[in-house]
Length: 328
Ligand code: GH3
Ligand code: MG
Ligand code: MG
Ligand code: MG
Image (spheres, rainbow, N blue to C red):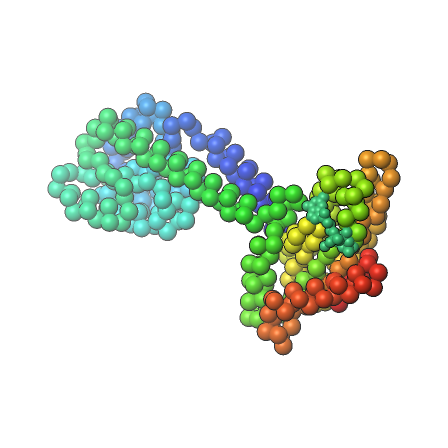
């Protein structure tokens, strides 16, 4: 289920995995068809605490990066290799999203390789080392590349985290209204293209003010989180729930007409009836809501503004008719 909490927690899991599997200094892929040259580099790096992976040709290098892009902090790449040469490898790696910014250091065979260096840098290598390799220069450059790589990864993670937080309601963990606006536009475009209906259900808790007034705002908050959990439990995989405002929620239901949308709302009603909220003072109460259902119409071009106002109007009718009901 594309649910905000799940995305966040799986992101945390990825982050933990990355932290656990990456050694302190860095991990580097060493690509060279010449065994002696490759071992020299590997030994020098190992002595300064850098983990190494090896590839004996371009193909192996690309396969290695494809398999575990997040575990490689930098790539040391021989230019002259049979099959895919160093430039080919750079081009392939730049097309792998998770590795596109991994620093690549070229290893060129001789001082006649000025053109190689220029070409390599144009392709996206950040630096080069001349053969025969100086271990001091090698180690310094690789350390710098690893640090750069890790700083960049941290930044990317922070950005993704910020992005997710901008769409999530912190109290319930559901998506927020801002994200709803984006998703409903997306759903409308999809429906238009495929001529397929979708529906929304506007949900407003009944007499919620009295929960706050009787038990306090904190209990009110807890009721809202429990309600959100109930909402999650009745949704199908392709449905998404949002906290629209205070005690108002909205469900976005893909490939769903008004009748089936009302079924989902009824399932929620039933579930809340089965599990009354138990208050601190030992009393319990069934949390009820009123809901307005609206299906996107081809005649309205599946427009989302009209859809929201029809659902709102239906919700108002449900309230006016006595609450605890679902109206179209
Ligand atoms: P109705 O059946 O007409 O919807 O009655 P109601 O009391 O639910 O409606 P009203 O809009 O008058 O009140 C909504 C209440 O929801 C008022 C506000 O204090 C409360 N509320 C809104 N957001 C939150 C929140 O985040 N936490 C808590 N605890 N209460 C909230
Ligand atoms: Mg070579
Ligand atoms: Mg309200
Ligand atoms: Mg209300």
